[in-house]
Length: 348
Image (cartoon, rainbow, N blue to C red; front, side, top):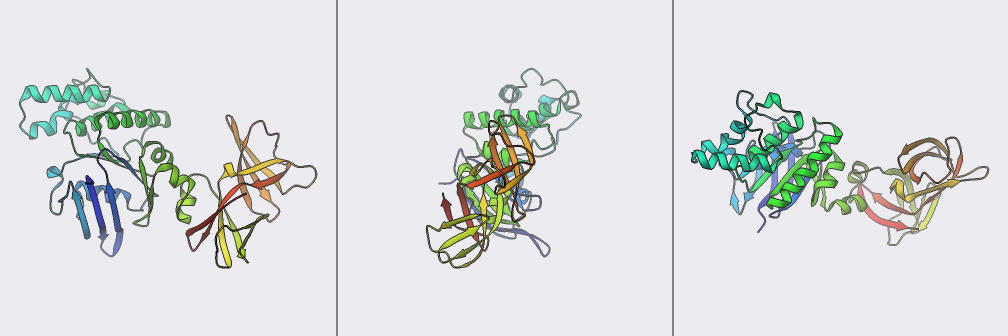
């Protein structure tokens, strides 16, 4: 049995639908990331799970039990917010112990559990300090410890690292994933950062306009985006106009037979930069390098094609291309989209 089940969950604020028929089953011990742009409904879904919002329709079950009408403090969930939401007048230990004291546990038990939680998040020995004496990363660790100490069935995290610098975010992601695996926690993590989602998740749920566009493993989301929105949102993607006629595709110098029947008409072709091979060309090539961005061992070339379209190509630094130089362009793999949905893939 799935530990968390959403069945056609909806939430409207007045006439505005924030969540429109979301269905999802999360298995015990699974780490699920809900990914999407601002305003897509991802945080509202998290607040519905935690009980901070009431659904307009649908059902939400935890361990098979309907959660309708169950307040946040009675749900087996723990929430880590974007802001630390720590009480500044309390010590670190007091913040972590607060929920345990509400349960009227013995003082010795509270102290032992608080010490264990702080050690788990790398803050052993800092229980007597106040939040103002800690760095932003340490404060977020306290917020996580405050949830973990209550031993929730489901850990809910609403963009908890978004206010931190890039290096600290990366380190805390690794620490969080290690803790989650060690404890076997079920976690639902909301983010707009695709790198964060792809690195952390067992499965990624991509949302747009209140709906789920795709739910799959990170590799499948990246390699086989089911909709044009996912293709354009996750990772770098070249989106080019194309045309299907007589079972063949024509698009930006590419002409190929389609592996499955596709009705004639216009389409959109999606190509990852790593599937675009460029090489220096003598005289006039297929395109001209407008910009070359060096990223350590690789570079990204912005190539303007004869049609005026620009494509990005990921190239080895060993390939002698330069800005302003003519290059040949060869596309190894592309996906074809019609009416926003993926219809086929071509490998060349």
